[in-house]
Length: 163
Picture 1 (spheres, rainbow, N blue to C red):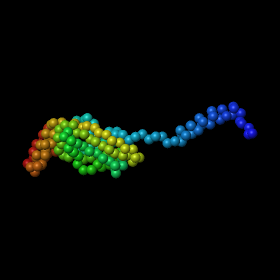
Picture 2: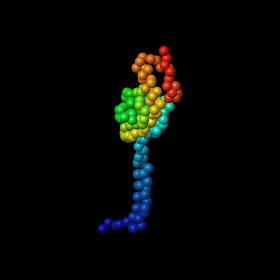
Picture 3: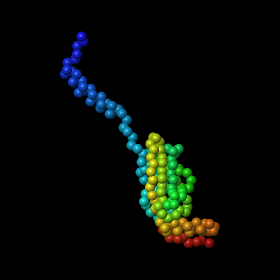
Picture 4: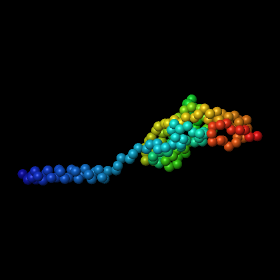
């Protein structure tokens, strides 16, 4: 009959080998990567921009994969106010906006996938004031009549016509 190691040797092996193996596995195993999330946005969520932005630009915590970047902006009536396709640059996804938009709460929705394969989706609101919507309507009416418009002011006050 084969000889069994003494009880003290078995206990020592358990006490030393198991913690050493667990430590080695913990150190050698790759750390779980954090999920991609929205870091900042321009214009920011719930900000009231002084002028109609020409684009929205969400910035994420990881580099984005341009093949899977989807961003949309809808007005208070649910109609799209975005123009063009999203443009991906490193961690940002920019989307152009139409030059005229109604007043009210606009929603920016996104579904993107990072270069590491982490998907993220969500939305945030950007309100547009009545005076800014009136300003946009005035600009649109001037352009529709073939008029040139002076450089837009920094406030939402109506611009003057140029001849």
